[in-house]
Length: 289
Length: 161
Image (cartoon, rainbow over all chains, first blue to last red):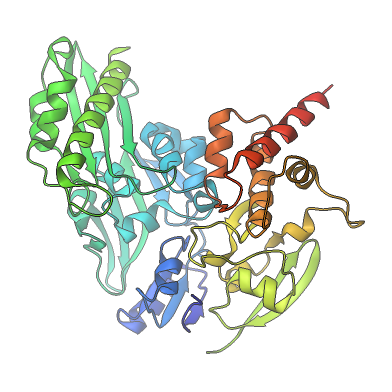
């Protein structure tokens, strides 16, 4: 369908964008890549009065390394992260997750921060952000705050953002150079949202797991960590870990949704198999050093 | 709603438009600029029929507002063939390999494949098939389209010194 009418503004600075959002008290939406927002508007699922286009805001297209973090600006597109060049290479999961998003035409426009804000429970970036303990930079009329990804996603398409908030960047901690990472997902067709998926990161020190993070995709109403499995892995000797058993453990307390695409039980089984595969890959990569 | 003034380049020509903010690039091309080669199918980013190049990158024209494109460069299916009407290598390959039947999806496919081969002149089978996944065709079963991409990749391999 054609889009319903709205007003359009294209500010040049973060301050101007925040002021425009504050004026409308929740009746304005931020336009970055528009690959989720514009379809929502075409389908009348979103009806903002004003679109604040942030594509001309100076500085939001940057990827920078700051104090042990890679900081990704709100207008950095999936395609740039997929290339894995520049500072984003310090967080290897970014270039591995990006190709799984939609199709290349979508990745040329869509942004990482936009996907976080959209908060689809079956999307890749929320899961990657939760897995890697990313923090989301939020600007509003009352100042700047950083929200941990683990507290950002409240439910399907629901976040901790409030009316008038603008996400300006997200920062990912850089793990040690020898760390291993993997992301696995299953979708019926290339580019579809996944039926199930998992992202993980492992660090190994002296043959034992010294850092472990597992994030599940599409397994709950929002991206979440598999805490029980993480605790079982942390501190264990790599040679004693059984990825198959850990895959089952990671999904043991999950209650994935049943919908037209898959039953809850099927999702749990696929999730366990994918977790096994991802853990094996990450453990192998982390054990090379 | 107040209209937005946009100055952009389409197929190498300067265009000035005054549009409602809700005007998508796809509708601006078809309705305002009468470039009806860009087709509009699903209008929410799924089918790929409206794919065009913006600053060289393939994008969905139905998911972009033309208001966003002030100062940008757009190339449509009309901009891919030569001014004398002779077909681009990708268009010729679609014709040779029967990569179309009704033709509705074809402009989107040709633009996507042009961008794909720009980035991967000799795509692997996986790159080729993933590269086609963002465009839907309901007639051909895709085999002719896959063959067309292979033909272009093979002929550019022959042309290499």
